Amino acid sequence: MNARIWKLPAVGKQPKWKILPHLQDTERAGLIMAKGRSEKEDSEAMNEDHEIEQAVAELEGIRAPRNIKTTALELPEIDDKTPFEELSNEEVAKHLQRSGKMVINTCMDIRRGENVLIVCDPTTGDIGQALHEAANERSDRVLLIVMPKARHHGEEPPAPVANLMRQQQVVIAPTRYSLTHTRAVRQALKDGARVATMPGMTNEMFSRGGMSADFTDVKRRIGDLQPHLRRRRILNVKSEQGTDVTFEVNWREWKLDDNGICNRPRMLTNLPAGKAFIMPREGTMNGKVVIDGSWESNLVDEPVTLTIEAGMVVDVTGGTIAASIRQEFGEAAGRLRAKDRENVWTVAEFGFGMNPQARLFGNVLEDEKRLGTCYFAVGDNTALGGTSSVGIHIPGVLKEPSLWFDDTHVLDKGTFLLEL
Image 1 (cartoon, one colour):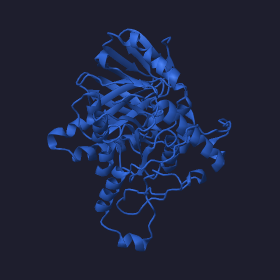
Image 2 (cartoon, one colour; image 1 turned 180 degrees about the horizontal axis):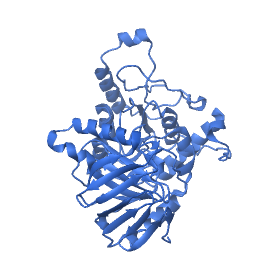
Image 3 (cartoon, one colour; image 1 turned 45 degrees about the vertical axis):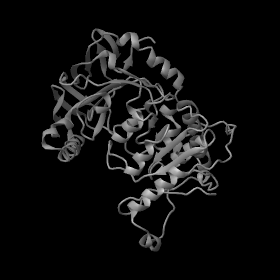
Image 4 (cartoon, one colour; image 1 turned 120 degrees about the vertical axis):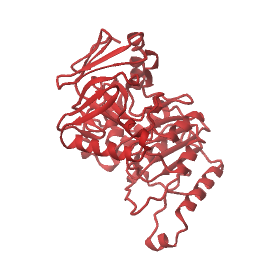
């Protein structure tokens, strides 16, 4: 086998990564991750930056043809009722294989010969391998690269990863922290790639819940929203917890392609998919938003209240999570020029869930897709055409909101009212 195995080095101690037995086949070509090194080998290794550049150069040169499977892998019927933690390694493997094939064949619709890059980190290795295994059945140009885990959502990937992303037709990124709102993804999209990100994805999430939805139906339902959005300019969100906020939108800017189908150039989606979202018109939002579902990847044990004036969060209250929010956004502001620091508090995005299989369980990737919920994100809005380029973007989910588009009642205490 001529393929090299590479992993981008992290600073300090390398995290451990356990690969499930079904994914330990070293005969598959095209896998790009790290060979483990002993301490002696580590001390004798060349400069890490130079090593990365060598890896990229080698990857760019891989063009050797190889045999490709042309038939889908036959999988036995899978038990979706047994609690995930009670499944054996073999059963988990079957779940990962099934979801991997669904992502590759249905969501991304990968064609023979397409350049495919799968970016994971040490927390998502099994998922990356399952995607790699499925993609190898469709294309002979599939790379899997493992980068060090980021520190927060929106952090840029290492430069070699960003450079590789620019050269692909398909980028799939199951990582602990989101790459969605990064310059690297925006550039890859500009260069013609279609991109699916999966921030916070776990083996359990990859196999159950929102990922098990009928994405063809999700796409239809989201598409059928269009007549209800047309010419609606004022949105109002309320909840029994105390949310009461009003803001303007440009109805033509609704994003309705987060439906699980990402099969054309320059398309971007999260998986699991299933939401409609938009950037609030800058400077128009006023009121209070009470986050009572989840914030980032944590269920909220004490509601967090965001006081908003002219589209900016001016106060955050509500216990330990509120304190951590103030600290995290304060640190993000400290990394910016003085004139840009207040922009970290921009209310950057609003959306509501449309995936009936998604769950609210403390992972933002799935929480914000749950049918009957809505969310507000704070921070960077440049991916939606805004002016707040601040390198942080974090959403909070409301469990049972009520929502109006002008005078059209859309949600009533978490119950979806429109007939689609």
